[in-house]
Amino acid sequence: MSKLVAVYNDDKKLMEAADQLAAINAPVEEVITPFVIEELLEKFHVKSNIPLLAFFYGVFGITSVFAALYYTFVVDYPLNIGGKPNLSLTFPVLLFIGTVLTTVLTTVATFFYQDRLYPGKQPEFEYPGINDDKMVILIDKSKLSSDMEAKLRDIFTKTGAEKIDEV
Amino acid sequence: MYKKEVRGELILGNKTYADITNDILRSQEEKAPLWWWIGFAVFFVLMAIGLGWAVPTTIAKGIGMWGNNNQVPWGWAIINFVWWIGIGHAGTAFSIFLLVFRQKWRTSINRAAEAMTVFAVLAAGLFPAIHVGRPWDEIFIFPYGPNSRGLWVNFNSPLLWDVFAILTYLTTSAIFWYIGMLPDFATIRDRSTGLKRKIYNAMSFGWVGKMSSWRKFEDALGILGGLAMPLVIAVHSIVSTDFAAGVLPGWHETIFPPFFVVGAIFSGFSMVVTLMTLIRVAFKLEDYVTDDHFDAIARIITFVSLIMGSAYLIEVFIAWYSANQFEDYVFVENYFKTTGHYSVPYWLMIVFNAFLPQLFWFKKIRRNLTAIFLITIGVNIGMWLERYNIVVPPAAEDFLPANWFEYSSTIIDKWVYLGTIGLFGVGVLLFIRFIPMMAMNELKQQAKRHTELKPSEEEYQEIKKLIES
Image (tube, rainbow over all chains, first blue to last red; front, side, top):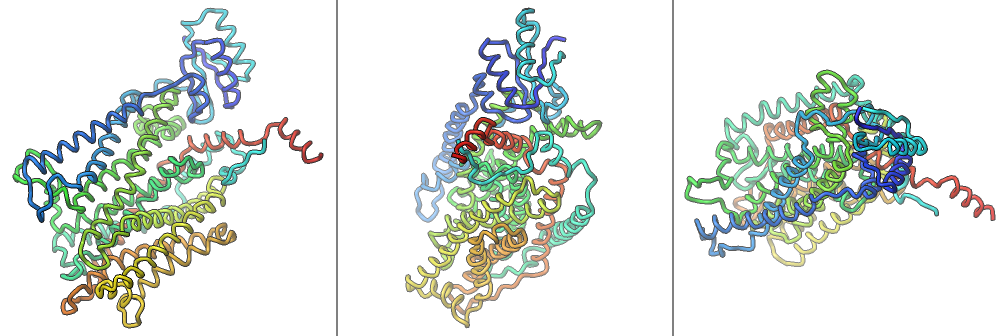
């Protein structure tokens, strides 16, 4: 019984609660929703560094693919194909594709790593309906004073939570 | 005050979030209907004969089993390859272009389109693999190291680019497809028990819809989409350079890269529509795949058909205008004179690709399911014929009339092709049975938008007052 769970089935009500929680700076641990609610992510300033990392992966990709092409085609074994230059204008095609492949694989790996997702992992938190139509707000009770808890329960009731539960 | 969706309502019937889950998962939780088993049996038999007999025969006895000859070294294998790759562009064209352009009407259709991509690209990949004749030597295509041959592959060759481009495309679209499904697998996991739960739990990677997870999910998918969009254009341009870098009249055309990309989108969209009409009727999903969806796609098909039509015209015009006798022979002599050997497939192609889709200018036809189904099937046939017209006539009758050799396909050719159709059909049928065929989490997002767009009680009163005054 260490977590307070407020269950909503309407995202408008959830957003009302989120507004009020953000206003009093409540220690919200997590909000779990069956689909992405952009406004909610903005409200709680949820950010990720994946786009920035992806850019660096791309830079890494293009450099390493160019290095590989240059090594094989110019340094290691310069082939004379109809007298065309070895460092040729055909490089960009493979540079582009190689960069995309590197970036895709590393970005996805980062996503799985940061979120600790892997095949066979048991879900960290389960509650009936959270992947269907229920949205829940999780609050760590150990960080709550008793009057804060009363205040939060009041917010949940007033904003129309379907159920207030503890797990 | 007055808010309206440009594309009309995309989910009808005031669905709640729970309704959406139930509706989409109905196809999996109920027993498979009879037509599913019949379809599966038919496609499975096609696949078994094609991949179990025709492909091994080709490999065991050699490419001589096909209709290819000295003049036409690329026969049905390359026609089918380009055709399947074109269809394979649907998923990305549909899902990712519309994602990047923030077109919300992609929602109900993107999952099926992405699934199609994966199976179509698999089918496509088979053809170059067996066309090599000695598949066990394919390792030489890859620049593996340490370099035991003392020689690297030719990075200047479009055929080599093809290998990398298509493998990258397959990887990217499969990953994009799978990541988008994680939340939906979690939904199925929560609703099931026992072994099914274990399987879907493994497939969902332990997904929980936390805020931070959603942020990363959206960002990762956005990045993948942004990268895959130019990749689509690159892949099909590269496929076109397989031809355009050649010296044959009818092949060495600068128009080929854009022409191929547009053609791919054309056939891909048509195949998506063909499938979606079937899925909509079979599973009674009229509320999710609405007439407005078909309307929007039909408009795109009309536009793309116009581009195709003008590309055909330009080809013929340039051939005539160049006054080059070889070019002239391929395009003018062959197609426009009664003595031409290949005018039938050419004119069928013109009818199916350039003329029939123009019927979509009429709203009645855009909203008639049967008409849409038939026209898009026609486009798929037309696009196959287009590849035939590119691959066969220029090669069969090139510079020296003494060398001309007619091309006709053999029974093995046909069965390899039918085998890939079987593979595609089996894949799609398994997909609609075991994977949620519409992205439920995105549909719910869409439903949320709809409720937001509806006027609130106060706004409604205000509008009412305004009208009355």
